[in-house]
Image (cartoon, rainbow, N blue to C red; front, top):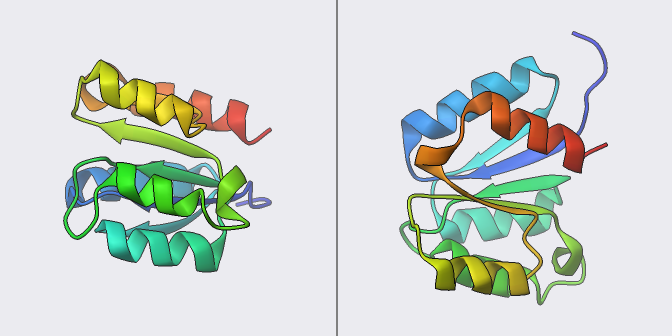
Length: 125
């Protein structure tokens, strides 16, 4: 398989999307961690300290925006790299995400796995 490229935490409550992301990114050589809700995602993010977080906004227990706000209060989390993957096409949420230093804000219907992979490779160079 070759060397591992980095670790990615997928925080996504849509199981089929989480699995598709995990399968694709694992095959590319990334170490993948998963969380299906915001509370578990925040706990894993701080304990694992992945190289990149793929974060949904609308999730059970804690939404992605409040997770990000909490993450930015953590010593490690203040600089964590985050890509939002969401169904929301809300310009206000996108602006808020940018204020918190999100790498990308991607609406799920507007990207492919290949597009996302290119962005990930660019971020994790």
